Length: 134
Image (cartoon, rainbow, N blue to C red; front, side):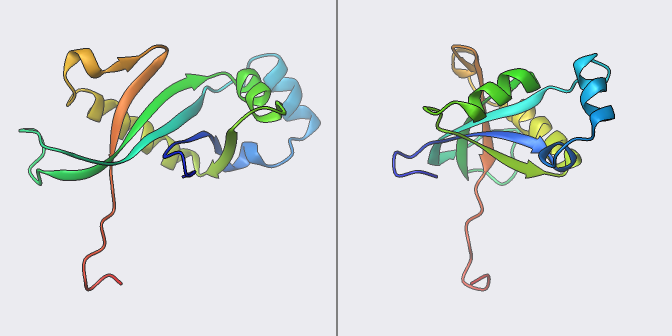
């Protein structure tokens, strides 16, 4: 996370982070393999929240704004000289899990706090080391 307290990233499946073969590019151009990519904006890395839905309340969390973008839009953000977006390659199932956790956490927020412009707001539990972890 940058000093500003926020970081923007595109989460890409590991296979997509590698150069694509011509046949894969053709399939993408035709829309047969098109997949939305997760664009996240880690907005606040230091919040605590409580919920009747969370048995371990209160929890330390990271506030994340997120949205799904097309590969074309992601590439434009990543290739722009003025962009502050980075790509992160993760296994596709990890990205799916993160998307699910963010969606579920969105329901824990008050209705008025669930969206910010084109972004959806979510929370990710923050790992807090215990004395035995270090």
